[in-house]
Image 1 (spheres, helix red, strand yellow):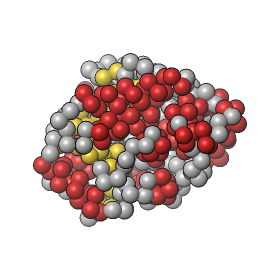
Image 2 (cartoon, rainbow, N blue to C red):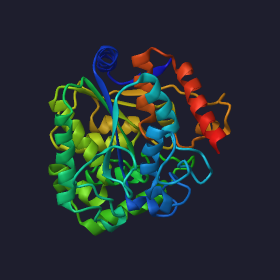
Image 3 (tube, rainbow, N blue to C red):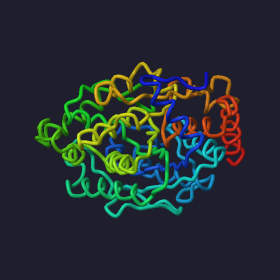
Length: 364
């Protein structure tokens, strides 16, 4: 079976029909948060400091097949390459138009892209001051407007690259009083839940934000414990749904913060939104995307694309089966739209991913 569905299957069936016959567009939102530089929190870079530059390098590689800002592919400290390898292989196969949206990358990516006017790097959330309220609100509104300018699309797929994003997701959800402790995922096989909780609780205490205030205005949750990417994705989601389009949220537990922000901005999420991710996320014992979505917006189904790298010819990819990386740069969602729009089975998509990984290996 190429993918599994958790939740309302009729919503997914309707989406599949649109993916086969409608006009599609993919957008990859990038941004940085200095939360990712807290030692032990993120492995989306060879060192904590380098995680700030991973988003720009991810999308430079996605577009050109190699980063422009640094002559190295983003890797974990163990040398496991970015999930953009999966995304690049699949987006090139399905030939879907795509764009990069910079919501606050630490360095400007050296590719043609869309830059939100209020883009800003997020500050560490253990300060309780992730970004000014006015900036967070502007990012939401600008992304919503962007969706309105990209009219004529039946299905948008939106993904992300933001190291530290599962920790800021925990921050946003906790500020909104969702029970998210121990439920967000990690790119590491050992999920640093204790450290994430410590960082979030420290930020909550310093912010003095009350749950009632955050639920009435979720931008407050973002400005205290969030980041530039998830609020921008929520704004774009809002605008896309106003365009009467369907939206595939391509990602793992980080998508819980996107739907939570949108929900508390009074966006109607029923029947038009699907989360698409990888099997490594939905089978992860150290997190629970399913529980988070059920608590926030149970009408949103989750599609789990059944990639399996256990027989991959490269150790770097086989490490995904050991709990490394799991998701990112819209990998699961891009694989899903490639599968549906091209009719290629997941085994065929895996071969394309292996070929792309092999190209990288040969370049070293």
